[in-house]
Image 1 (cartoon, one colour):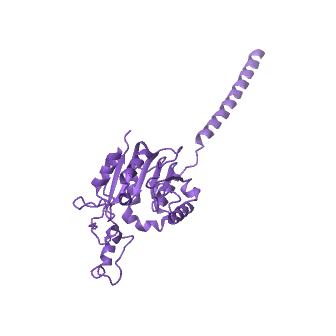
Image 2 (image 1 turned 135 degrees about the vertical axis):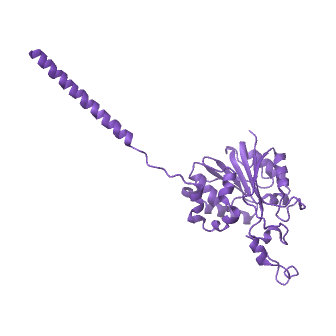
Length: 292
């Protein structure tokens, strides 16, 4: 009887010990299960576009439609995105990519072309030097006869965009060479996004792009000859009020709003208010892809 009682006591003590151990583990597991990581807020494109630092650029959003344009060109988290001769768009694209594991690559003029351009390059780099906002911007170069856009060791791009520049390359006789080099800078499957002042297909295309307006068919041909596939066009930057036949070309409209010299023959019937009310130009928005 004593032995039985002693064994029962030992078994009871062992059970209590196991229960205590088991209870401790369960509590720890419960605590571990209830610990949650702090929520990381995703910085959206809307957040970036609404930021006060864009107050000046935002005045032109109604004409340039940055949200719709960047989304159409597939600019997004984790992408390496290059912009040819950047400016107005940097304050939207660079912060958005920096906050979402992307990389912005600013493709500038080469240094040493002339003093004026060197000052612009230095001013640009200083303006966007805050890595907390813009990330560590990578730099590349592009101009007539400047060679490959990316330097040795720079990774190819997911997306390359250019805004209102094609007429400049036409004027310099290197439009085809430009598209050829864009093709080289992109990885297979990469996107080329082009926004340009649009000349109606019924008008005569000046091969030098003197008016600043370029036909969609002309740009599609440049891209096709470089090896690109045409993906789609968007009317997001269209402006049906723009007839593309103004006395000073596209520069008659906002934001340049060029006017004739006071007292000149051109000034007699020139209606600056009418041109201002057109807004900015009608623009083609074209997306091309480098084949896989």
